[in-house]
Length: 266
Length: 321
Image (cartoon, rainbow over all chains, first blue to last red; front, side, top):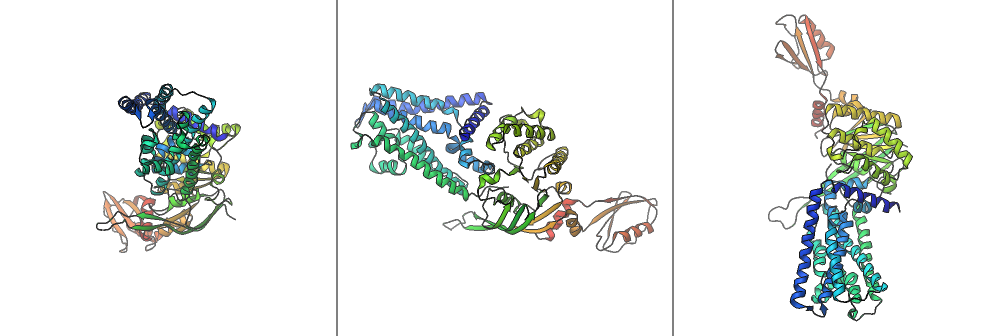
C-alpha cells in the first residue's frame, strides 16, 4: 500500500517538475499527437486501398492498431523510468542514489519517470479502438470487456518486460543496446497489424520471444468474433498471461543484474 | 567490536581497452581498485579518507554504503553487512555524493524532503521535528520553497545534507562534500558537521581533496593509494612524518646582514626580506633561530606554516602514488 502511495506521490512530483516548462511540455505533447496520428494515417491508407487484409476487415485493423497504441503508450506513460530514462539513470549515477535508499530499486526506477506527453498517443489509440469497434460491429459483453482489459494490462507488462532487457544490458555495459529496440519498438510497429500477415519466422518471434501474439492478438481475435486460430475460447483469457510471465522473469534477472552493478565514476 | 569493521576488502573492475588495430576483440584488463584494505572506526568518530584520484576512496565508500559488492574481504557496520539485506541496512546510513544530487531538480526542496519522508517511512512527528532542527542548523528556512536548480552550489550542498540526515542515520558518508564551495560555505558546512557529530554522535566518514576539511574536522585520517591503506592516524602525526620543508621570512634593521648557514638551507631575497627555506630534520629550528640572531638585529619575522596541499603532494610523491 505504501508503495502505491509512494508511486502516486512521485508521479505527481514529476509531473509538477515537467510543468515547470509549460511551453516545452505543450509543444512536445502536440508533437506526440502528430507522430501517432501519422502512424494511424498509415492504417487508414491501407484500409482505403485494400479494404481487407487477408480475412481482416478495415475495422479489425483499426482495432488491432488501437489495442497496441493504448498498451504501448500506457506503458511509456507510467513506466517511463524503465522504457526511457533508465540508461541516463545509470550514466548520471542516479541509480547509486536509489541503491542507498531503503526501497526496491525497480520501484524507485519506476517511480523515477513519467511521461504525461504520451496522453495524446493514448487518445489516438482510444479513437482507433472506438472506430474499429464500430466498423467491425463488435457486440460488447462483460466477458469481452474483461478480455480487452486483461489483454491491455498484460501487453503493458510484456512491453515493460521487454524494455527491462535493455535495462539489464545497460547495468552490465553502462551503455544502451539498440538491438533490443527491435523487440520493443519493432514489436509495436509489427504487432499493430494482425500477426498472421507475417511469414513464419516473424510469427514465431512474436509468439515465443516477445509474445505479443499471445497477449494481444489471441484475445483481440476472440473479441472480433474470429475463429481464434482454431483454439477454444478460454485460451483468449489464458494466453495473455504470458505477459506477466515475461515481466516476472525480467524482474528476477533485473535484480540479479543489480548485484553485478559496477557504478560509474566517483 | 568496533562500529565499522573492514577486513581485507578487495574489489577489482574489468576495464575493456579500446580495440587495437588488427585485433578482432577488445582486450580486457583487470584494474584492482582495492587490494585488501582493513580498518576499524568507532562510533561517533569523524574520519577523513584521503588519497589521489583513483586511489579507491569512492570504491570503499560505495562498498560500505551497499552500492557495490566487494570481490573479497569482510565488512560490517553496526553488526550489519552492507551488501546483504540492502534495504534494511541503508535505513541506518546517509550518503552525500558531492557531485550528484539526491534531491529532485525541478521542485521546491521541501517537496523532495516530503517524498524522502515517504521513502524512509519516517513518522510525521519525527519528520517535522527533525526538519525544523536541520533547516535551522543549515539555514534552509528561507530556501524551502525554492526549486533545487535555482540554488547556489553552497545552498545545494546544505539542502543535500538536510535530505540525507532526515532519517537520523547513525553513519554518514560524505564523498567530497566541499568540492567547489566558497570559503564561507565551506566553513558553515564544517561547523554543521561538527554540530551533528557532537549533538547526535553521528559517525562521519568523509573523502576529500581539501586538507583544510581534514584539519578542521577529523580526529583521524586515513591515506589510501593504489588500493592500499598507507597511513592511519592523527593528522599532526601525518604532517610530522612528511613535514619536510619550512619557510621563514626575516627583515633586518641593517641592510646587509651576513648569514652563516649550512649548505642545506636555501636563502633568497624578496625586496628587503630574506626568505629562508630549510628542513627541520637537517637543521633544527632552534639552531636556525640562533644563526638568524647572530646575523644582526631582526626587525620582523614570519614563519609560514607548511602548505598542507604541498605537503600532501610531496607525500604522494614519496609514497610513489
